[in-house]
Image (tube, rainbow, N blue to C red; front, top):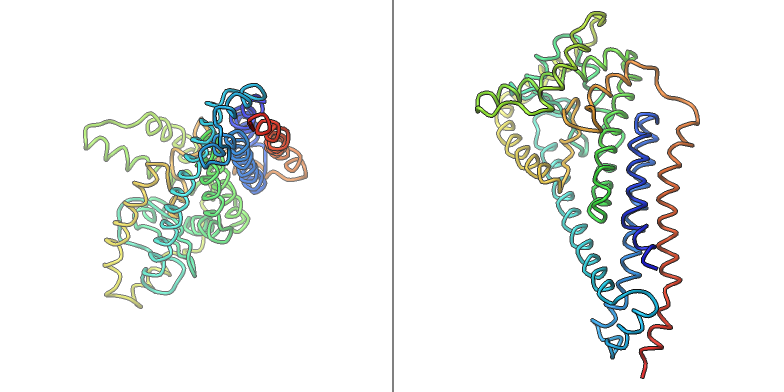
Length: 389
């Protein structure tokens, strides 16, 4: 009987994470996001069902359903396992409920703050440019969603590359990608073994937006150039800050620029100009709200600082976390080089992805089956019948 609990809590999720890590670059990103998110939810439900099944005797004794707890303990140990295992499952179940509730509340607060921030941005256009020298670009979901780009990002990209950046962020808004990220984090809150799968889903979400941007722009190399340039600019900015603080750069910070410099700054990048959509939006917003534009950056920075502190605790994911070219995301050896390599290759097509994504989904379904089997097969009636005087 205990092996069913071990399968649902440890073995099946671990196998699902390993399988997903192997398949993440072999699947179309949209298929990977949908399949991995569904698998994570099934794994979480299976673990919750297993904890419920094995924690039921302890819960029955706690609420007084079983009047003679010692008799229940003896009969449960004879039929299944020591009663302390049931108490442990009950405690784990309470911790899971608390973790999911706290994570869900923080995610809801983060989404509400992002929508409030999107509504408070100046102008009515989709794109807002803020006077910030740090390279950054992100999408804020709302009604309607907004895209925020810093002047530092525009400077880093140069002329003719803004359309690909905006297409990437529009893909996040149109696809409601923050919902998949939030769902994955709720599943990981219920089952911590799924945290590596959250990273894989984040990576697949960015790949999904990259592919959508490539389809809209019609130039995969241009989108790859924007992804690499944005990541390189952000990493160089972080390196300058760490050097000024005397702390040195991190291992990822040292490795990513050297890799991207060979790809982004090497020969062969196309030089065709793209439509400069950002500057037009910037000029229109400056004319429509000349006095309101200086105020939002401070409010924006304050809220972004709160959102980033939550992200560092890995307890909430604000929609602003869905940013183009953010370093340190996805499976090693680095998500940005993998994203660029995928963009430089031909897009994945065909039905093979549906067959491959069925592997983690099948593992998750099997885990649910084991949990349901535990609920049906555990001898509750026999245990309580033995416990009766």
